[in-house]
Length: 300
Length: 225
Image (cartoon, rainbow over all chains, first blue to last red; front, side, top):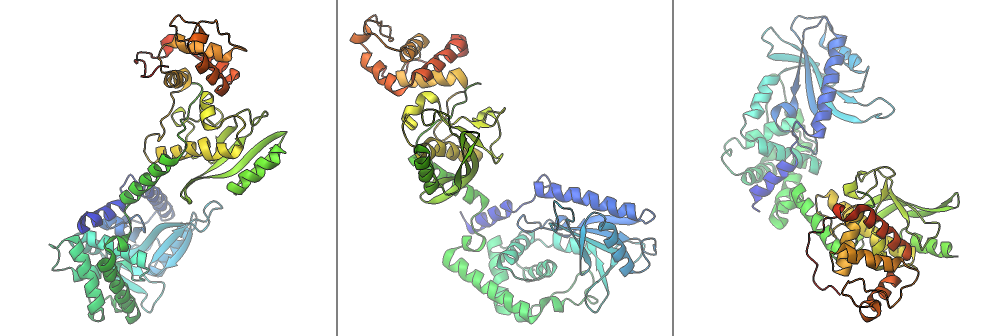
């Protein structure tokens, strides 16, 4: 199996189709979340949509979140006068059914019943307000940090990633981040890989990944990213600090060494298909030395 | 005495299985591992109810974790969840009467759960499976006696179920000779392996099913004794 065939198998084993149990569970929660919000803000014109990896097509089974935006129309104060009010009122609405953990601009949902207390549902709700009638740019409240307001544009973000031409590399980079415990924000990682692979889109997936890690290893110090939705307004430099860059260098160096010494499997492990084949083989070997015994049922 | 010996043997080999006595019945409950080369391939929650006449009788086995579907195709009785580990007529090959319980656990029971794991992985039954009911009994005796003739089988079973067999009886192979001049040793050998009770039961099942229920259109297997 070539490196690219292997990497594509890794991606296939990480795929989350709409009919997967994980996505079905998320979709059920999404319906509940939307109902909770709409019931709480009956007089508010809300735009509730999928965002994040679900909308970008970059979801991985191993680590996935569902981002749901809930934006109020510009000038609509029925769900709160300020961004902070909108944020807190969403939090209160969701708290009727979930334990809600505020995290920056998002509200992370967890279980609060006796059967699922503290269970992370991998769902982030992002309250906000559109800046004008075009319903493109939006302001989000930031519960932490100096700046309390963040300007963003969901469609610009989605298009930027979806049209990047390096979706597969992004998914692999996300998997690499999780497996190596690199504490980089997913959005920042996406921006970094899109930037670093800007002129490598026609390369093979394995070549793209090796280039990405080589760049991180050798040139992390100069790496900067900017928010395509607000290049001048949102400063992402704090999301790519020296400490993080140092961790990226170490992880990238280690990964390249693993590929060199032990091949790609050392980075992403055996695929589901390989694991299944290995399991079937060991069961076959176990059966070869076991007492050959055939089951029988008394009545058909 | 036997209970204590069996208990210590089994618990030493399977530390997660425990003996419990309830209402004069002995149960062995806990986690049953599927092993290969000291590696735990799988584990099942099980309950074995030892027969009142243990070790003469077969234990009743249940998978208690709810993992194996209660379906005839998985050899689990839907009504009560009992696992059909083996065909009693074949017991002499797998767990001869008088063998310790440990041999049952490491032999046919281990193979049963190993097979369940393989099937769960989408593989065929690694050791094959007997058809359900009368057809499975027919298949077993077809292999054992190397004949597809139900009349031969039922005569053999008649002789295995009889208190005594006499040499002047006609040989079950139906070649016209007397038993003493034909398959007497074979019948004697089988009578030592297959209990009268088991033979009686299988005979009754085969007779009840009748020829029509058992497809006997397959040719005789080679090497009929």
